[in-house]
Length: 285
Image (cartoon, rainbow, N blue to C red; front, side, top):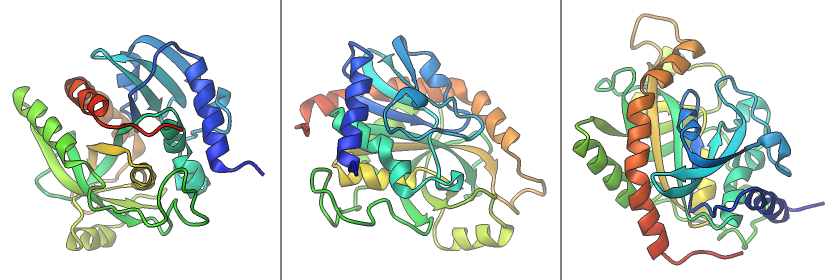
């Protein structure tokens, strides 16, 4: 039986064989936010179905392809769409792309998602840089035998979201005259949206946003020593805050509406993150 490390190495070798670029930063583009990858220069687009051992995204609004190209002069590997537990995938399958990034020697990742706003300061379309998370998905991608080639048995999560990267993003937004919030993300299993009672509970325990992704990817990335910047787009206010029904079409429409601000923010932070990555010692496999 092939182990996750061997599978991740096979996927990374295939991806690197498809391009002359050497990505320094990995991106995961969530529901309605995949448009950033369409603007990459010198781009190579690789459907997930072509990548060895790669999980296939089935969620609406996810193009299900890896795009390797240049953004603001920085070579990146951008995932247009991810997989989730609610699609029936295991925690190991959900985090497999992070393992492949690690084997590509990518040392920093930007994770994005569409989220429901719990914090009443947020409005639909707000961008929020994550400061922390609460894992309520009932599982963990590190359960099972630990592979020391990826990381330690008990990884620290104190700096799950890299503070210097948050500061880079906040400064970039300020220079552009845009509001960028900060908040704590609660990850739930889904696929249904939360009940009003669940939202009241989440607010009580300190959550500002809620969604169905990202948390496992962060845990896996930190396990491997990657630095993480995560940005949520508040595509809808959570259940019970507004007297209206939540639907996925609204999520996609809001993602399209904020696309310009979102792309501008990513283009502003990438060069500074790339500089940090180049100055940091890398992990070689």
